[in-house]
Amino acid sequence: MSLLRRRGGGIILLTLVAALLLTLLPLPEWARPYRPAWQNLVLIYWCMAAPQRVGVGAGWLLGLVTDISTGTLLGQHALGLSVVAFLVLHLHQRLRVFPLFQQSIVVLGLLVIERLFSYWVIGFSHQTQPGSEYWLQPLAGMLLWPWIYIVLRDLRRRFRVS
Image 1: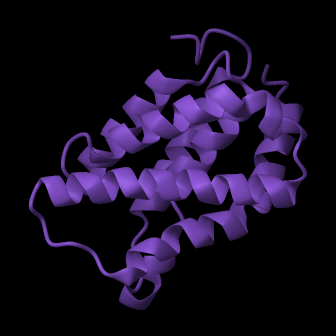
Image 2 (image 1 turned 45 degrees about the vertical axis):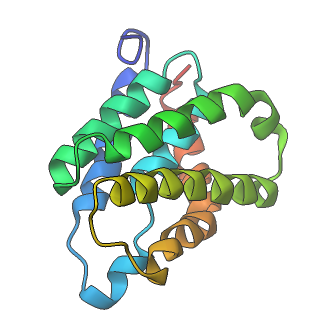
């Protein structure tokens, strides 16, 4: 796994773990629909910034860990995060030159795609379908993307992650 081999691999792993912890952080009932998909946002950033180190396999593993830690159906998040990682890897050279506003719109699309896969798995497993608040999470992620991008970019530069 090339994630930890070169300089700064610990920073990548640390940010992915921090994103998972933010996902598990308890919130009041009224705030749960607004919780951004932290693991998706951090994965999108690292796939865009270091595509040679973070890829579909990292997305799949992060998704499995998310499934296990949140108690969802095994593979529900893994499928969506793998697809998102694949799309970002395919488009990373274009995404890097977009201004943050345009990146936010693309991130919204990626987060909606991940939610669609999750929704599909929920329907396939005959679980109760979530309500309309299910779709607020991608909007929250879109609004937070510029700040997440700036913070992770500064970490990448400070610790010279290549």
